[in-house]
Image 1 (cartoon, rainbow, N blue to C red):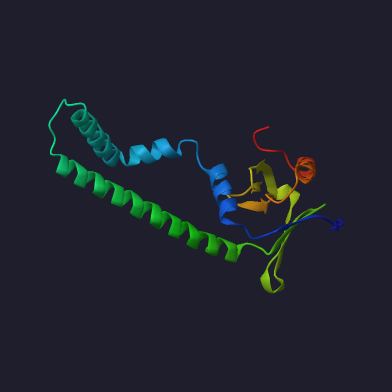
Image 2 (image 1 turned 30 degrees about the vertical axis):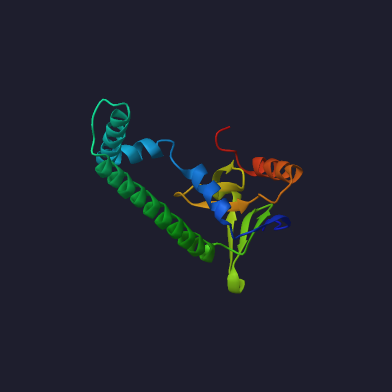
Length: 178
């Protein structure tokens, strides 16, 4: 069996900022266009409301300003509710995700070792990974099967430590996008 000498050790749990960075890295480049097209009716209504408001402000039409104001209040209320629910949902998701993440992630010469609560451990050899990506706060190591990743929080690392991590990962698996 290969030597499992520990090379680098990371906290397994992540923060809200780490999660946002990981989500940003994993999001499709077409996310916003797809979202707008999937909700084309809402987009059309908002664009119509914007057009009507600007048209009224320029004096091209004579809208019922009380009705226009009420519509904008309703739109603002919906937007605020959606933002509130999204933040609450993200906080709940972070709590649930951290419950499933290991306490520590250890990069060894043979692969990635995960130490969980109550003495649970897991091991993934380097051959099970297809690449890695670096964000501002996290490094994602992509597994070959499915969409699974190992998340390494690196926000607290100095640039020298990050360089060392990059070199180590490049020696084990290719970087995605290079």
